[in-house]
Amino acid sequence: MAYDPNNIFAKILRKEIPCSSLYEDPFALAFNDIHPKAPVHVLVIPKGAYVSADDFYADASPEEVTGFYRAVAKVLKDLNLEDGYRLLSNCGVNAGQEVPHFHIHILAGKKLGPMLAV
Ligand code: AMP
Image (cartoon, rainbow, N blue to C red):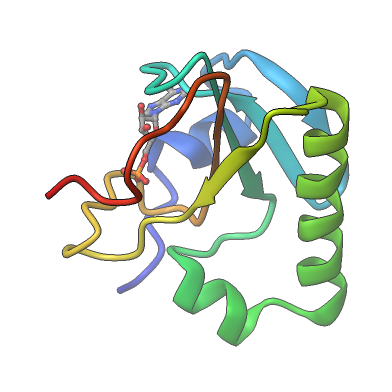
């Protein structure tokens, strides 16, 4: 699937629409999810144009991958989620990915229940 430069996260990266930003560096941007599914619901996105985890792991440079995950780690440290958290990334139709720009969800702040709705 080709990258759509008009997806909502691309617009956020270009500052065309606002977000509730928590952290930014040359590799990543972290912001609060607009429809939080938990008391803490943060999205971390790479600066590069990658549709999903598939694209990111296949095509991102080692520097981009390292920089991105260091940013995830920095956000997690800053959030200080002593009672734990869940990381997830939806990829493609079966996972219900809504926004075609790779992102990691950080969910925390309550007991999150079973890993999957059944
Ligand atoms: P996914 O289904 O994994 O693609 O998740 C996309 C997430 O992006 C959802 O949790 C949405 O609530 C969130 N989202 C969509 N638009 C925005 C926005 N403008 N600012 C922050 N989060 C957004």
